[in-house]
Amino acid sequence: MSPSPSLSRAEPAPEAAGMPEQPGHDCPLCPRLVTYREANRAAQPAWWNAPVPSWGALDAELLIVGMAPGVKGANRTGRPFTGDFAGTLLYETLLKFGFATGHYGADPSDGLALHGCRIINAVRCVPPANLPQPVEVRSCNRFLRSELQAMRPLRAVLALGVLAHSAVLSACGIPLSRLRFRHGQILTLPDGLLLADSYHVSRYNTNTGRLTTAMFEKVVEALRGLLEQDPVAQMPLNQL
Image 1 (cartoon, rainbow, N blue to C red):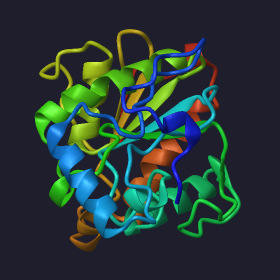
Image 2: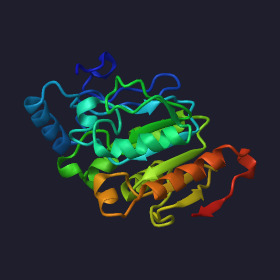
Image 3: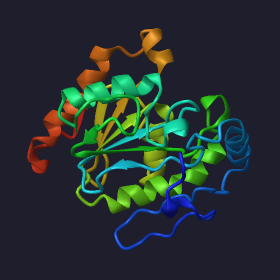
Image 4: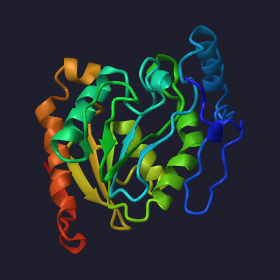
């Protein structure tokens, strides 16, 4: 897959009017991830092998935040949660509750379309062993913060896992010790933004039973219900 011309610069792209800041195709911010990226490009030159851009409209009311691209998933295809197991549960659930239409075929050309939601990873580049280091999460947090600021109609964020939860709080300037991750909780942040937590939709979590389809659907269904309410009527705290 050839890189998009808009992502061809090495340095992170500056914000255009109303657009979030994006990392360049050869973003240099995290040396360990750069080394891994170059190794993947040498081994699999047809793969995306670059920071994975967010997907979905900027005027969406829901932002879904994952951890980082999977090496054979989004790092290969260039679309968040596309091409590995995690995407199956995520996108089938979004389809069920009206946040997407079409069919998830694990390929960016499958015709799947998002409605009212946008998807991003806390760390845009694939990390070795699928685990970003804290310094890499901090370096990439500027892009998440820019996304949150650019999404003016944004009403809710769904954090998939502890790392995503912490990254969202950091991007919002909230001390991490104040709001701990807990699967199923939906909190209202000081600026009125809803923050929902779910265990990550990874194969490990579903295979071990830590996260079941029913558990994940319950979180997304609750968010759908809250987003259909008038913003003034939203519950300040909902523990599922």
